[in-house]
Image (tube, rainbow, N blue to C red; front, side, top):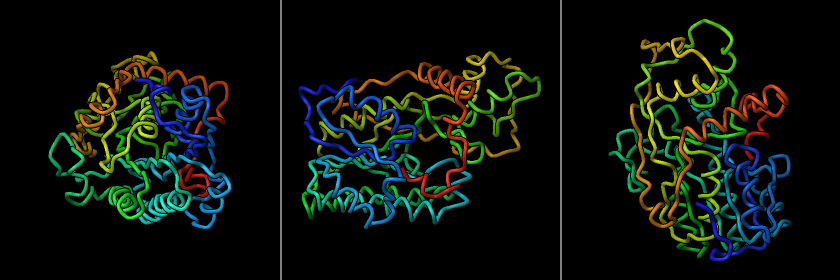
Length: 337
């Protein structure tokens, strides 16, 4: 799916937060191509600490955008979520509310907020529909970030109702692609596997994966995430948050086999440690509202995986400093944009 500038709402200047992370870098590459008449600003956390209200207000006052896409977040794998629940709750809540309040003061024409399917209750009926987002506590392993992201749903409604702010929200599922977080301590499952397989490609020892490989997962390629947010910015204006990720669903074992095949690794080296937890078996989403409104088509998972691995291998072998290999909360200021 591509966004047609001729039929979409136009903007003079748009600020995109979180432009150094996986979805943000994809949007940074696509937005000027699809909307060349717009001035796109991509601040880093060095430019503006979004957890600080005064800094957020002053920076955005100076930038004077008429559109904002808020992708910045502190997020990562289960290790990060379990170790830092207060930090993730605090920082993600502060960033979201600061962006909304600044957008209200500036009377922006649209602000797009980011939620996450990880915030859904583990006992919610499948496929996950938007009505279930607040229907019970989130999983205990990521409750800090989940509650912060859940808050964006009533915040969007409240700012629309009281102030008439054109705020909207998308709920992506697993995101992967170039410039993902490949840090071995807090990376999400998919980039962690890519790194582990690459580093083990010349050996003969088993490559061990926790669980039995049966849990099903949905992963959306980062270019698709970027296009979804561009669509929401230019063409969507409703308080109903939308599940915006793909519904292509694959077992973890199949994902591991694909990675092995792409890297030329013997499949027989893959071993599953069934004594370890395997996580939630399934958390598939219903994206029918989003697809009906946008006509969106997604990149097949295998195609996105091949592009991601090719990018990782080239970066690792030619410019390893370009890879995000550090801990998410090592140097806090670099984690929120």
